[in-house]
Length: 476
Ligand SMILES: [Zn+2]
Image 1 (cartoon, protein in one colour):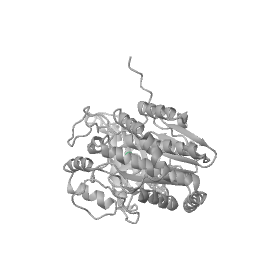
Image 2 (image 1 turned 90 degrees about the vertical axis):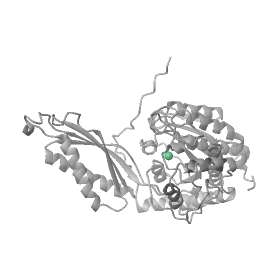
Image 3 (image 1 turned 45 degrees about the vertical axis):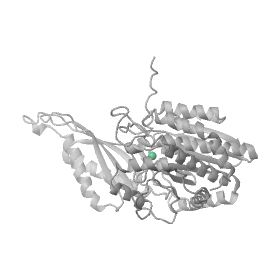
Image 4 (image 1 turned 120 degrees about the vertical axis):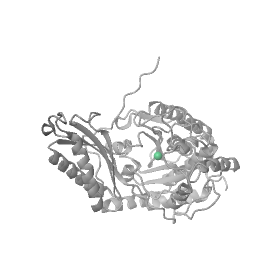
């Protein structure tokens, strides 16, 4: 590997500052829409590095955008910094041990995600200034990726209206251009209201909201047989109506997640699940109120940008892990099952290899991964502008998503190497888009063709606001 691209040098210049940011954010895990301290850390670095800062993007207190450069195309680099509940974990060890029992932790590596995106933006900013190239680079600090759909709200409220293309990444077990596959996902709440009564003395006077919620579940479980294969429907009881079996439950609340491979498919499935809820309400003579809490679309690919990112990765080679990185990853692998490890390979379209703790190569784009999919709000940005995403190895092969093992590896030298690599890949793709008009035009044409086949319908209704949480009062 030769250090030949000018972007790589600029990444190296800012690397230590942004690794320090990542480690600080790791140490202050905050949950969806509550990322006040983490966002403030990103704002401070944006100011320190000379970006023009726009706070409270789309009316969200923990969303921020920093911009640098003049004229030319507007290239967005997307970052995140939200954590997950229950994944508190001591860093650098290979056994589960919380820093705070039941506390939050960076079990999806978003401390690295945001910091590497900002690192790429810093490098592009320097390169634009040094070369006098017209172009604007923006870092978008996007909160609440885990269940809050902030980017979908930001898209709806115009935060990306004047962006030409967007680049992002996610920490992963293997290094690969993302295949742009994710499920559209709606989180919908159903509140059933009935009438309480003495369950023994006057059951005929009661109308059970718990019966309604259970009948809805039965109906949905029958519905599963008649939905497209890759659909997913799951639910959780937020309020099962109380703890007294001798009172007919007057109010219940159930949250459903409804997922489909296509946006149109999800919108249609949403309506079918609503019908089941109405049927359950009719059977039980209760009332149902239905509200959407959040929703995201499925990911849209972009072939020209994916090819450009592949070229950037091939130029760099894999993440340059060393023996110490491999030794720690091997310790982590001892906590995993063979199935966990095999799933990493299969998910990336690879044959299983023995005795390989870390991925220090680039998985070719031709390797089709398995269809195991979650959902992400990055998808809604991909419907708004041409977007490409990298997956970069930061954890041991086999490390499951949303796990204590990810939190444990979140400050490791391997993670720092992965985040630096991700910044170089994103920086190079950004530079290509600033200088190669043909590439940008091809990316936009590809995007327009995909939208011509299926138009974008924002999955979040007009009147739904993000579930913001108030700024915590500073302790005296
Ligand atoms: Zn994530």
